[in-house]
Image 1 (cartoon, rainbow, N blue to C red):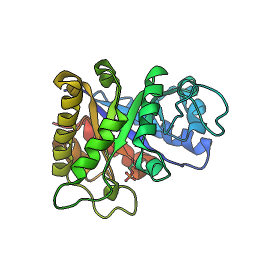
Image 2 (image 1 turned 30 degrees about the vertical axis):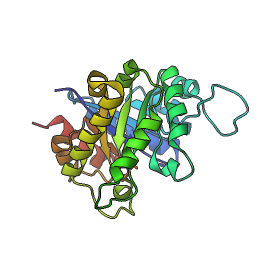
Image 3 (image 1 turned 90 degrees about the vertical axis):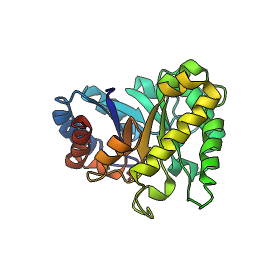
Image 4 (image 1 turned 120 degrees about the vertical axis):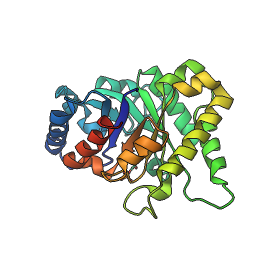
Amino acid sequence: MAKKLIIGNWKMNPQSVAEARKIVTAIAAKVEQFKKVSVVIAPPALYLESLSKLKKITLAAQNLFWEESGAYTGEHSGAMLAKSGAKYVIVGHSERRAMGETSNMANKKIKAALKAGLKPILCIGESSRDEKGEYHTVIKTELTASLAGLKKANLKNCIIAYEPIWAIGKNATREATPAESLEMSIFIKKVLSDIFGADAAKSVQLLYGGSVNTKNAEAFLADGGVDGVLVGRESLNPLKFIQIIYSAEHLS
Ligand code: PGA
């Protein structure tokens, strides 16, 4: 069985680099013994360099800009993030889409990430579900636009996180079920296969994200049709995050 990928998205937390170092150190102390899991933390970009010096955990950035340098106030290039220690980068998270990020922008960011040697983690997800299943169209449109122009060979370096917006964060209307994750995983693979062919589609790692916690992580990992999970809130609590990682390590 391939290693499960457990990614923690810290968003705009914690409030100091000292606290960030403490959480990483606590997680790494346990994770070192685990063999069947790859763990990645996405801290605020400002903390990447300091956390990478700890040499304890694989890091992701939460965003990047598609240009390599120039007059883009407030932005960071893929190369800058890679030099600061990131190996992955989240692209198109729903909280960024809510601030205006489009799939077209996500597409440019994915290409820039790959060029900089970063593995993009593309987030896709519908804001609500309807009885007719129109949300499938949202997913297909987001996927098609975000991955436009990529080569088949790029897909093995891409991760796709299905994150239904209605299941994310403390305002979630409800948790998604592993069956819903499985159904969308199959749908996503089908869309990828239609665009890039079956082999390339198989090479993409799929994640589920949205209110993943110590109680439901195992079920998503076992029955959700995914290669891992993207964890928000519970990744800031070392004990809870370690428990989620533990459930991935001990899947039968
Ligand atoms: P949550 O966030 O686990 O706090 O719902 C997930 C995400 O936004 O990636």
